[in-house]
Amino acid sequence: NKYQLIWEIFRIRADGTHAEQLTIDTTLAINPEWSPDGRWIVFQAFQTGPHDILRIQADGTTLQTLTSNDFDEIVPRWSPDGQWIAYLAGGVQNRVMHRMRPDGSDHQLIVPPTYSNDDFQWSPDSQWIAFSAFNAEIPAWNLLKVRPDGSDLQPITNDSASDRVPVWSPDGEWIAFLSQRNGQPDIYRIRPDGTDLQQITDDPAIETDLSW
Image (cartoon, rainbow, N blue to C red; front, side, top):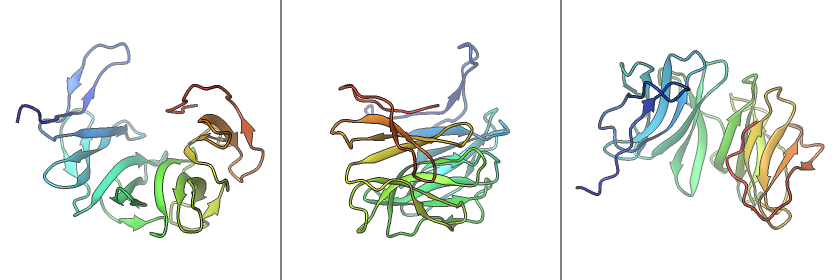
């Protein structure tokens, strides 16, 4: 099929030289992320069924499938200490956060399945995961945080608007996020305990893809 969409994983030097293709015929390989030690790249791919999570060594060898189920498993993200990979699993309307070891073992549910999860990020010290979610008690997208083992689930925001895309500051003292609480998408920041909310931008442009 000449219209088949094929995306592969490449690596390239920071100066734009030495582009190398790492995956071959994986079909829709997206969301790559380096391991903290630089040895592996984890990513999601559509192979023969739902999206699975795979990893490949940085030189393009040793491709391994880490998940293989009858539902999508997407957006893999390494913990900064390299001990875990968190990811989302399920259908479009109800994706729930899980974690596993980098070799694909020890899969664990992090967030109760009553929540529908979306954007998430590890804290710099690997002790928390901030994420956006909603459920019957939280009708709009809000920010929460949870320990990687699923304990100590806490709300960060509680607003009728949509709060999305949490991003930790490098020192772990702040979480930046996007919110429509003033009628348009703007950037805010808040302490991880939910205090000291501050609006950063206020313009008609649409802010996306936050990064500290």
